[in-house]
Image (cartoon, rainbow, N blue to C red; front, side):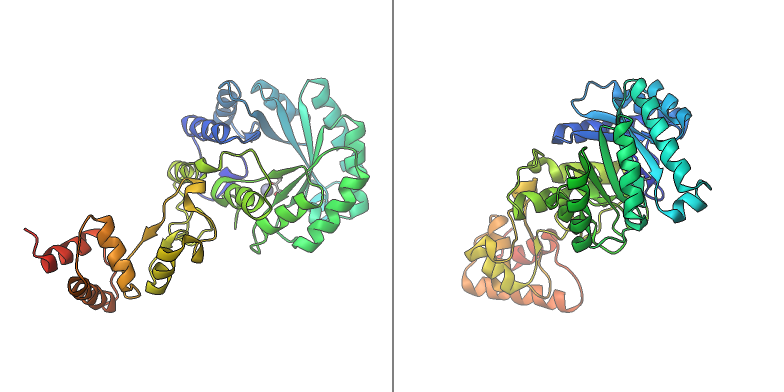
Length: 363
Ligand code: KIV
Ligand code: ZN
């Protein structure tokens, strides 16, 4: 709810944040970044409400390496902070106008300050994929010495590729004595692949957002990362996968950001079939044209009729409407569906009902 809310055009009220936090908690998310306490009075009220909502999840606030950010986070009763230090020379020079040594020193000091105030600290390297790896390890090591509980590697502008993510995480997880998270952006469409690669190579946590929301092309999406792990790698994430679709719909409704129809798993078309030959295959065995059962994430398959529809799709759609037709009637309905499809139109359930009633001479 911090990086996801950075989606252009999204600003969540307290009530909406609470609803989303409750849904994330219910689905089994273990840490919720509820916002950035320094942002505004309203943001602090929202974070505080989430922190005091009696959820099982650890509630976290984003903080810069500035002590006043920690003070604002403490006012919100959070359990933990996502403490973010710029680590690439580009970010150090242009964003905070300091040098590497001062960033190292400030990050350690602020970590210690947060620990002295009883917070769990996840020390994050912003733009880590463009940082000098030796400097990155040094800042993480200082952070651990100052009491950081976890670390995080941010691929801030989505420049990682899976092979590189693996190399980096093998190295970091063998040389650092704290669990390390992966935080990926999707600028080149690699966010899920990079996240999964990092997890395979030693990352202990993944930062994700529902529907892949986030700045620019967004973040790694919860549904893609969870289902890749569960379905493709046979790994039990502990997430209640059957609630994924309803959570995606809730977040889309509350943020006002529609999900693209071809978005994996949660897009409108992800389990929708039109082409006749596909539906024919589906009737024989669902696995023919479905990578997994839609019910696993709380969805149902849909059959739509259009110019690609085959006799099987028409027969199936009629059956689902409770209408019995013989071969000649199916042929007639099928021809009418094709005529409408050839005009570039889709056939809604109501259209099919009307055609069928007409051909079957009902009423
Ligand atoms: O992508 C990123 O680098 C971030 C940090 C600010 C944590 O979201
Ligand atoms: Zn981010």
